[in-house]
Image (cartoon, rainbow, N blue to C red; front, side, top):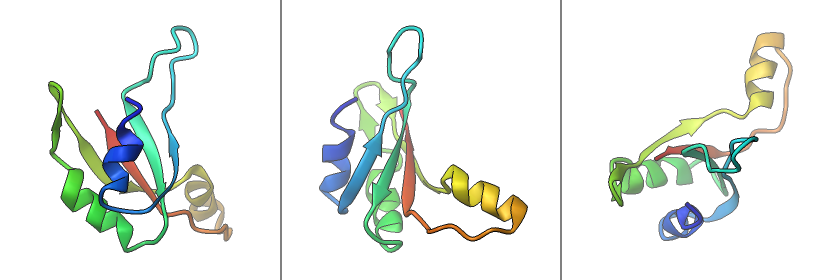
Length: 89
């Protein structure tokens, strides 16, 4: 779903999009991680895109933590915060 970046850019400033793929087949797994410019952009993206129908699928957009933040919470470490939204399709 390469148009994920374009959909988000209509509403927020996108810094990076990661579309994880199946290692064996190379197909997109059905979700994406979108890094946005500011914390304020995440609710804008969620409000604009969550529930939107694309093809025969409904997008689910929410705020997510990157793995460094999850690990840092467990180990009580501090890492730079990345503003990230998760999109499932």
